Amino acid sequence: MKYYIKYILQKLIALCLLPFHLLPIRPNRILFLSLEGGSTWEYSCNPRAFCEYLLTEAPGDYEIVWLFREPEKYQFLREKGIRMVRHFTPRGLAYALTSHIVITNGGYLTWFPFRRGQICINTWHGSGAYKRLENDMAGANRASRKRMEYSARHTAAFISGCEAFSRLVIRGAFLYDGEILPIGMPRNDVFFSPACDERYNRVREELGLPANCRLALYTPTFRPSGTLQEALPSQALLDRLRERTGENWRLLYRTHIQAADTTNTVRENNWIRNVTSYPETQDLLCAADLLITDYSSILWDYSLTGRPILLFTPDLEEYTAKRGFYYKIQDWGFPLCRDARELLEALDETLSKTTSDASAHHQALLGSYETGQACEKLLHFVRQA
Image 1: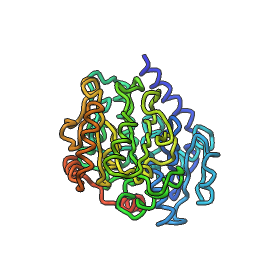
Image 2 (image 1 turned 180 degrees about the vertical axis):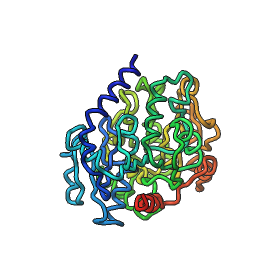
Image 3 (image 1 turned 180 degrees about the horizontal axis):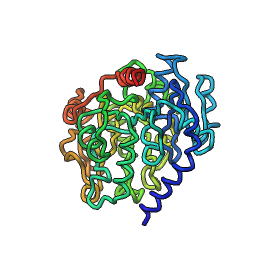
Image 4 (image 1 turned 135 degrees about the vertical axis):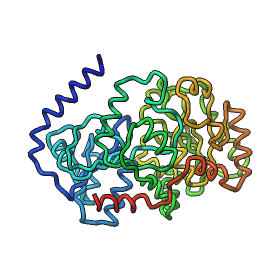
């Protein structure tokens, strides 16, 4: 019944938006939007990375428009010549239906009736092939499949960061048979440029941290319950890092955009900071000297730095049974830690290594397309569209 209600609502929306079809599509107008939710900033992710590349490499060539839930939050963008409009207002809908190019990391595509002549490019908000997505899980519902089919019909091109993501996620779970751009993720270009080192220092300054401190970043993925079976042993982790390296360490943690409850994730103090509301995840990845995650695709991005990664997975058996993976997690190449003891032991071993063999193995396993030229190649595609 829920599926039929959503189907009817979708048709009603399309009908109500018909008057906007009288407005001409503007050939040089590019609309940007990023997923909403939680306390995150919408000016982020792949759309932000490509937008900023446009401002630098093609100034004045395009009219740039962003859709925001709270445009007043982003007034600093006016100085860059960016037009900001609010979601689901007559003005916002008009821009959504008159932009020749639409750059999104998933928003709107599953329900919005974009017009023929509009070029919608899905950059998505992750790469790699890790936990199974809904359409690839046992008991996937019909509504999910229909949403993906609708999205696929309204997508002109899909960006991919690796062969596994193209084959298993885009062609598989997303049911997409259109054009794939094997160019890497625009937000990951930073890891191939001097800007990564600049952000390493800038994050410390913005967070008010000592310039010489080392940073461990903890990023658990989303769980329906919002809680973990076992909290990260944060203080023991920091003590071990200081003991082994003789350096000053801080722990940052960032919860998933959809996480409902983070009370047992990590408790803040002078050495531990919650950076969930920090505007850009990629800046934090540039700043981190060590990543601790679990099944999150954030490890794909961070693996491009060649820095250490640990997988803290106390609920691995349960997660495997309920969700499952595209590749066995044991094959990902990173230390797998089921509890606090294993995490600290793996930390000792990881800190003793000076090479990035684990990351190189992981990139080869999934068939990386990342070269640091995603924005450049996407601009070439946009100019030809």
